[in-house]
Image (tube, rainbow, N blue to C red):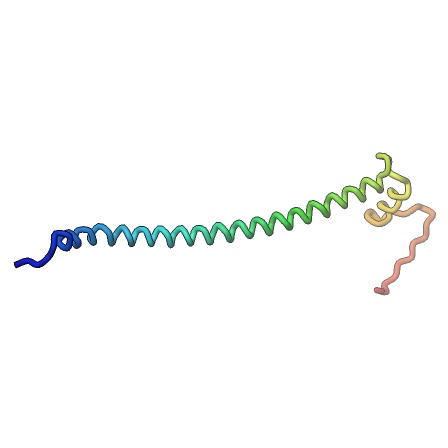
Length: 105
């Protein structure tokens, strides 16, 4: 005679459906954890990049303020134009004598 109760008879049927569901749930959880880690890593990289860009923005704003101060009221000062011509374009007055040196130091 069969000593199994009706619940025990139905158990293999329940296990047959429950096991794939558990495996699917665990796989879904692991996949979600991996995706979350990747997204968090991307988030940190973007946050670091944003901080770098913010610092560069501040540097450029300070540079703009300095240049605007050099320009004064919108007119280039004679001293600024002369310094720019000497340093960047290597221009000098015709009656000026320029001495070059090969000495480094």
